[in-house]
Every structure is written in structure tokens, then in C-alpha cells.
Length: 363
Image (cartoon, rainbow, N blue to C red; front, side, top):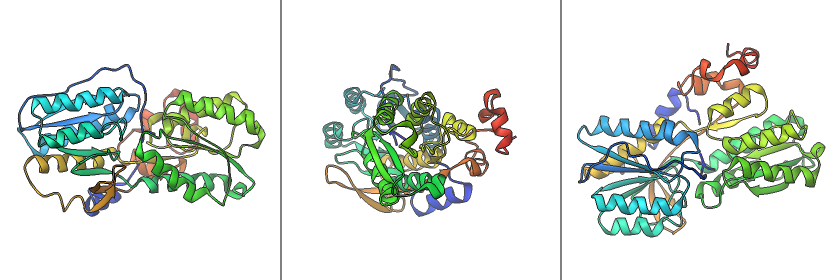
């Protein structure tokens, strides 16, 4: 899953060139920030609240950008809470309300296709956000997801150093197959790792820390604790469960990847229980999606923003805006998530991590 830091210059470059992952069960109900009927409303549908980024970053950044670009526009927001059927109903509800543009990060990219096509048939413009949903969507905003996987794989190799040999056994815990991004992360990781290490065990962790932990426990039983050189985790959420399992098995000092630059992931990197993450700057992504949504609402061309094309699982060629992800290790925390004000030193360096932060040069 299902889920990167770009310095200021890199963000500007990404936005000038071109404007997950994850799903999880969630008990949180819909949350509607502001809603109204009529053509001045933009819908925002996010997949879950388990993934920290959606509620903390994507939603508020998106809404703020819409307000800045269109003073009399409103944002109708809902969260699927990890339930694909619920998200389908949310699409239908927004269409009934008269929402003219819907931005959606699909909980299940294939399952949502019929809902998207039904909305489009009623004149609604749909923007796929972070994950490329199937159906007749008008635009797609995300990061280069194959590149994300390549960065993860390369970070694992870099952390292994001289131990990166074809005999070194690596465990791979991929994202949820229902998320199209997961396949791209996996492809990118294999591109970096294949032929350089031995992928000895590979399973889906479904973007859930508990499932990932179970899979790694099985890998340890199958391979032996002393025979695992490193673990590829497709995101930070799963890496949390994996790190706990590794510790319980007495395994330490081996590389463990992640993605999303979650606070807990950054803290594990500082502490040495996770070696890397991938930061996909949330604000540029949310801003890009909001800009395209407002332009579509106002009948403007998006060709200068969506400068490339991606093909969805339904075979639709979608105008796309892809941003550039960045790998984060202990060495560049200051120059990425802290520099971009995603987190402060105080956020990261709580009492539990104070000693490790000092050793890492953060305090």
C-alpha cells in the first residue's frame, strides 16, 4: 500500500514539468467538511483513515487549494473507511447532490469502475487521485509509482552494501492487489532487486500492519531468522508491523524499507529499526489535483497540467500529471521532511527518540 519528500526546488520542478499506497479497514465514518448542491461543489473521496496521510495532509491541503483558486467553491468530502462498496455509494450520493467534479482515490480501482462510468454518463468529471481508477476518468494525478518501487529496491541494496549478493535472501511484502499502485511499486522494486539478491519469500501484506507481520513471521519460520538479509515493505504502515515481528524474533540490524514518510516510519529510521522510506510530497500532489478539479469545473483545458498519459486497468488512456518521489534515509531527514515542514524536529524527537535523534544530528 497504500501511500515522499521533495525539496522546495524539486517540488517546483515537478509542478512545472507535470503538475499509495493503501487500503485498510477503518471504523471511522464519513466526514463531510463542507457540502452543498450545485455546480460550484467539488467532491473529494479518499479510501481510508488508517493511512495517516489522507486525513492529516491530503484532505486539508486539497480543500485549502480549492478555496484559494475558487472563492465560491465548496468541497464535499467523504472517506470510504476501507470499504469499496461504501465508496461506490459515496460516488452515487455526490452525483445525486449535483456535484460536477469528483476527485477520488479508489479503495478498489476495478470495483469503482461502474460507479465512475455512471457518474460520467450524468456529466460528472472524475479525477483519479494517487491511484489510477478504472473507467472514464478525465485526469489522473499521482507520483511515478514504478520509480517509487525502484527507489525502495535501491535503498535496500544500498543498506545491504557488500551483503547485496545473489545468495542474500530478501523477503518482499507487497501492497494490496486491489490497488493498481501496488503492482507498479512491486514492478519497480523487482527492477532494482532482481539479479542482485535472492527474493526468497514474497507475499501481499494487503497494506495492513497485522497481515504484514503475519507474513514475515511465516517467512522467518520458513527461512530461519539468521538467513534473512533484508525485508522489502511496500509502505510504512506495514513496516511497523514487520519491525515489531523482527524484534520479537531477535532480528536486528537488517534493512527494512517503507513508503509514505509517515511520522512513525521516520522515527523508526532515526532509531535504526527501519532503513528507508519514500516521501511523496503530499501538498504538491493535493494542490495539483485541486487545480485540475477547479479547471474542469470551470470548463478550462488541463492539457498544460496533465502532460503525460497513463493507461488504466480498463484500458482507458488518461491524461496524467506525475510528480517525482524521493528516497529518505537517516542521512537526509533534515533535507527532506524537516526542510519541507512536513514534521518538526520536536515531532520526530520525542523523549523515546531523543538519544537516537542526537546521534543522527537532529538535535
